[in-house]
Amino acid sequence: MPRENLLHEIGRGHIVAFNILNVGRFSLGAACIGGAKNEIEASARYAQERTAFGHRIGEFGLIRAKLAEMAIRTYALESMIYRTAGLIEQATEQALEQTNSQAITGAAAGKADETHKTRQTMKLLEEYAIECSICKVYGSEVLDYVVDESVQIYGGYGFHEDYPVARGYRDSRVNRIFEGTNEINRMLIIQMLVKRALSGSLPLLAAGAKLQEELLSGPSLSSIPSIPSINDSSQGQWSEEERIVAGCKKVFLLAAGAAMQKHRERLADQQEIVAALADIVIDIYAVESALARAQKAAGTSAPRGATSATTVDTGGNAPVFAASGGASTPGLGTGGVGTSGKGTSGIGSAGGGPGAVGIGGGGAAAVMAAAARVLLHDGAARVESSARTVLAAVAEGDLLRTQLAVLRRFAKREPADTIALRRTVADAVESANRYPF
Ligand SMILES: Cc1cc2nc3c(=O)[nH]c(=O)nc-3n(C[C@H](O)[C@H](O)[C@H](O)COP(=O)(O)OP(=O)(O)OC[C@H]3O[C@@H](n4cnc5c(N)ncnc54)[C@H](O)[C@@H]3O)c2cc1C
Image 1 (spheres, protein in one colour):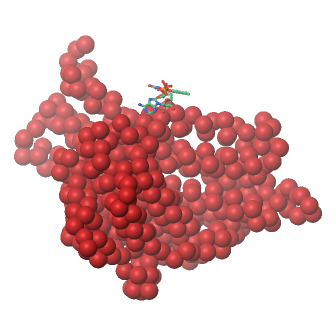
Image 2 (cartoon, rainbow, N blue to C red):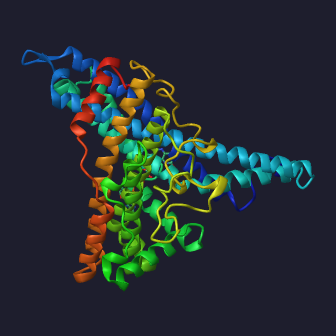
Image 3 (cartoon, rainbow, N blue to C red):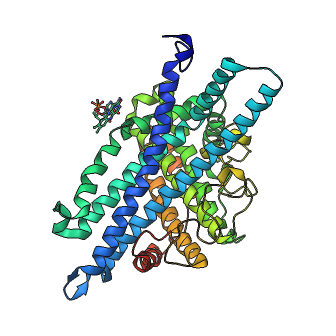
């Protein structure tokens, strides 16, 4: 192999290969959006054509709820992909600026400069590996859900190859298998988080230990920072939603801290626990991305970091998902759901964002808000349930009872009328006859 034909440094090809996997995982998640939109459109149209019991099936509440949920999960996926793309783009631009300024000073030239750029790209992609895995798992599972419901809406014709959804159902399935199976990616998400926690770039250990310390030192609950009661959080249109997201992050901290304390370096062997923790992380990232986009569409987003609601602390100032901060802060590490600033440039836009169809600007924002609230409330319930599973597996007796009491406190929220919210989204799907955003 002539030296000039080498694509990267000798002996470091595996790093390129791993990062190609990261890009592939992100792209796979993005590609699932297109498939899901096609299925929603086909199903929305079919629901207007097919009649049963003297009605178009699109008039039935259960069919409308399916169409709404299909759009809602696709909206979360799309928001997550925009957000991740924006974060990677911002970091890439900054890295390029840095490289260019170094080149001007003559620090690197020619081939060495190329190597430097490749190294920087590798480093950057590695930094977003967690987000890429999340996009892969969430995207493939959203698409699987959407195609499954499409088949259901088509009834018997859903099985028939003459209709479009049978192929979608078949083709979707492989997405959970390649680019690393979803089981492997769930393991990776937590493995990478733990690695960053241990290296100190993510203050997860300190925050978890502090929470555990407070739990054990008693007088139990009184020393634990409480989430304001629902009635206390009247500041701002989105304050309640932000408080719930912040609570979810505390729930993760509680469950992950308890699991790490019990199993320490052998946590990876407890795959069911690891997967439950990964599910919490995935739900938080999806909910937070959807909420950020809805806030931006409504023109009510706070500047990044301007709100402390989503910066998890345990009485002190230790953030949970935050990495090193600054420009290279990965998506999981954002200080909040605020959407202004370069880092989230990809997330929608005021008035409904690119591609909003069938509903005007303000209307699109209202439908996005309804979608985000469904995701938030259902996501928070799943987060609580996953944490309960983890805690019951790692603690018992008084310790478990105390941890469950803390969990209830962090997860406290009033229920939202998600049936009404889904109906709002169903109306938008019906009037657009497709994915409405
Ligand atoms: C259509 C298609 C195209 C493909 N294209 C490519 C390609 O272009 N390039 C390429 O390199 N590969 C490609 N693959 C291969 C694909 O990446 C593998 O199929 C995938 O990684 C799963 O590996 P496996 O099939 O060996 O399954 P296995 O590794 O045998 O897994 C079987 C099951 O066991 C689970 N499992 C395995 N290990 C663990 C573990 N440690 N913990 C928990 N659960 C585990 C898996 O999650 C899965 O559910 C393709 C596959 C398909 C079907």
